[in-house]
Image 1: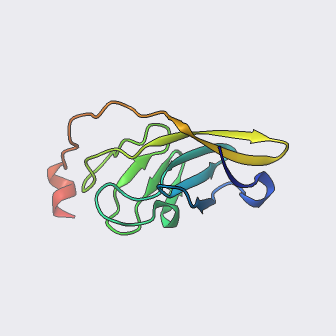
Image 2 (image 1 turned 60 degrees about the vertical axis):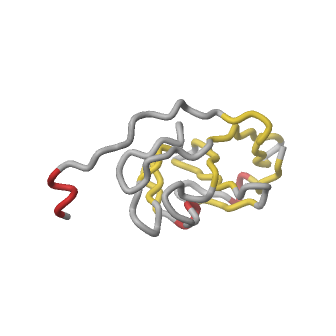
Length: 119
């Protein structure tokens, strides 16, 4: 278990980056807590610096979207998922369990539609 922060220090819509063997980003999405590997699978960018919208985080470098529940990318340029981690709250403090990863199976690469390719 890795200590992240006090629950009161992570308001809804915010994230925190914690140091581990692989850095981890913890997000508070309207009261639901999620933890994923912090580095975008497309290129080295910190997802904790991205934009949170619902259960998705947008990478600040190339706008890839990752589902915080599964780690799966939902649009290009990212094609590979990031690992997800179990988040626990005990006595008002957030912990991340890195011993068991909730990783989803790798799906087929996401293809851009013609309208997305033009944008």
